[in-house]
Length: 136
Image 1 (cartoon, rainbow, N blue to C red):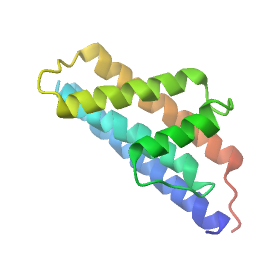
Image 2 (image 1 turned 120 degrees about the vertical axis):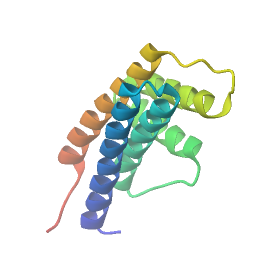
Image 3 (image 1 turned 60 degrees about the vertical axis):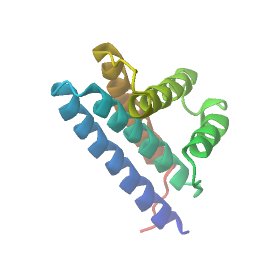
Image 4 (image 1 turned 90 degrees about the horizontal axis):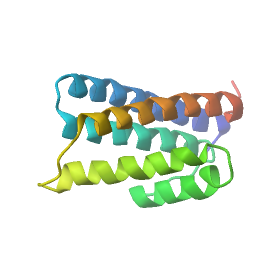
């Protein structure tokens, strides 16, 4: 994959992440917290995949995408350690929201997921601007 295509794919995935944040905000405002948690997680996931597009590398399973990102971007200090913990929490809350009938969603936790998604988008935007090459 050429650097131009990698950069375009990274930007496309980041746009997906931003769309998910918009959906999350709308669901949050409607107090549909389970669905908002799902959209916040997918915003985070698309942001991570935007970073990986610059290598380019991708995986079929979410756990593999997250593990690779943690190993190569969190543990190496490219992104803050706290972001790794927040990503893990978002993944857990999304899974519980989607699959555990008894899971009680809290407004504060959902707001935290939304904030994590927004923060990661900003960090990934900065990363792409600094590291994404575009040979136009």
